[in-house]
Image (cartoon, rainbow over all chains, first blue to last red; front, top):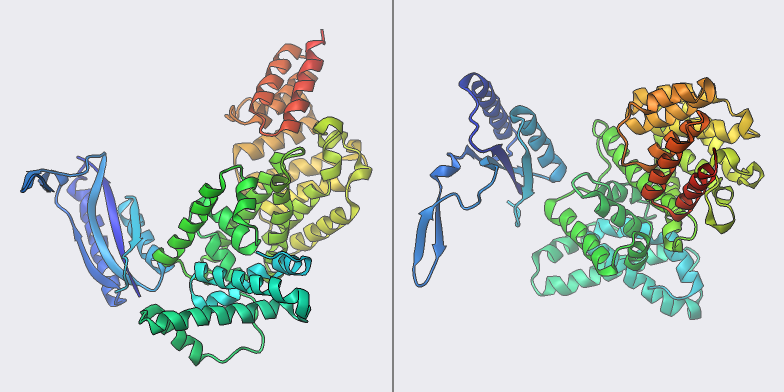
Length: 115
Length: 405
């Protein structure tokens, strides 16, 4: 078994209204329940807005604290799931479902050592 | 790398199958390839004196498997976990009676959609076609180091991302098979567009694509689209000698000397088209092959059944809609209903970056006696044409029109 990161990327600044977001969140809950039932769930959560991020950098003899986020772009990491799957095809079929639910681009990436 | 003729011949025939079988032992493409290459190096040393074994393919596989296991023993002795696991698998499995063939699995791995298209093409040619990195680099006109990196990155991705070695399930198969066929057809078109006068590595890509399709057709005899693609390429290959005139000019289909078509390839192609269509599940490759079959069945260009070709393009437009299909359909409509009807279709297409679009418009405008516009279109087509032969032909056409009233 390999652990895979399933990362969701969402556009900056756009928060869908509750009547849109509500049903999506419900489907993600269902998705996570299915992952748990399949013994594939490791971790999942959404992230707060990137403007709430804080960045640390090693400077001259001390670590500097600055306002985040570290990466500025038009899209940001909105949340992620960590799953266990026998191979990429199995991980992709979970990821595919999440793409269909959220309409967001989903990145699937293996962790360096197995779970 | 092999040096003697006997080893070279076996290399081209057996390399892909050997890698696919040794992969069961190594579970890593890079290690499987190394083991098979070492086996061929041993063959090159021994066969000239000991003689070529009766079953050279099995000899290579046996030798390569032993090489792989020797390596695992050394690594396992140093405490490497993966090597120890591989050895445990090896000890648990008896030596098989026959090695079988895992090339189909390997082909689906090489053509996995998680790999970039250029990587899929390079891997398929390297691992299944047995081409060297240098040959593939020459064929695609990129530096050898670039191609080497492309291939090794793709192998690393297969390993790290966990792309599985198996034939996709029935539900995934149609989409995945379409992906494999797309890779093979891309290899063919790369060789085809290079045309005459290109380095032989480039035009050899056509033969390589046919070889891959033949292998696939043997491994998946129940898939009509595989035979459709093979037929499409064979019918195109049958016209190779007739396609270029002296000085490397392109000779278009309508003007080719049909006695120079390769009759054997035509027969094989027509047979495949009939056989695949009889199965009653037409797909884009079968229909494209059927269109080529109509051309191949016409004794002279004038006897071409253009109405049938229009009907086939109508079918193709429902199976695989797109502007290029519309453009080709327009050409057929032009033969049945005349150039004005065809131009009407063509003018609605947005294909201004595609040289064939301009060549088709040029020909239709010429037939409508709009010579100045036709000359401009030939010029644009020549500017965009990828191959030397095609460019020369288009320029010749334009020059012919400049002299017209």
